[in-house]
Length: 217
Image 1 (spheres, rainbow, N blue to C red):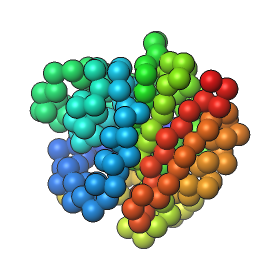
Image 2: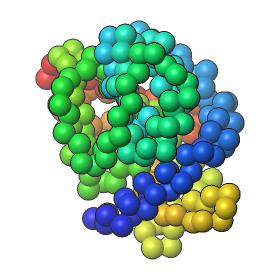
Image 3: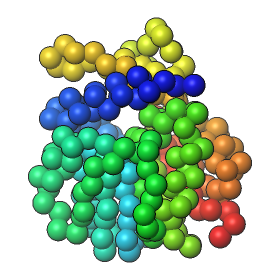
Image 4: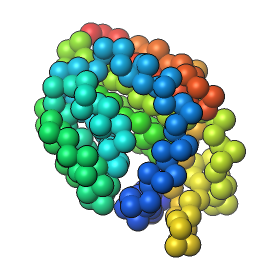
């Protein structure tokens, strides 16, 4: 079981990294962006949309152009402050610990990017149960994440090498964060067992895109 100390370290890392996040993430994401946006713009994302782990607003700005209204949740006030700089008129930002989250309403679509790999296995089922409660009938969940191909870029964590990696900031500070690499096939098998029907494709080397709906709806 993943301890709270690792989860706390992960949040501390993203809080501390907020101001420098886009400087590294934007060029990292650029080669895959067109392939991801092709799926994102496939007309599933519409109406009232919930974005989880919205970060600096990199994806929020795209969702804003597709949705009537976006509710964007993130655990870091510092990340939210960065995202507000886009001044997106139809987006409501809220600070929320996604490991302690009970949806208070439902949305037409739920989206998250580069978040699921930060959800450890022992919290995976509970997270998806919350996502299900946040979705309206006939709603859709879409997410972007990485495959094991991207493990090559990470610094191995000696304490929990299958669960965590180590990340460093420009100022030299080092943090341990959750990083669980799951293949499209592994994700599809696990989500099917939880009652979801998903199409999960590697849309660019190292990047996957998933479209999921509750199987019973």
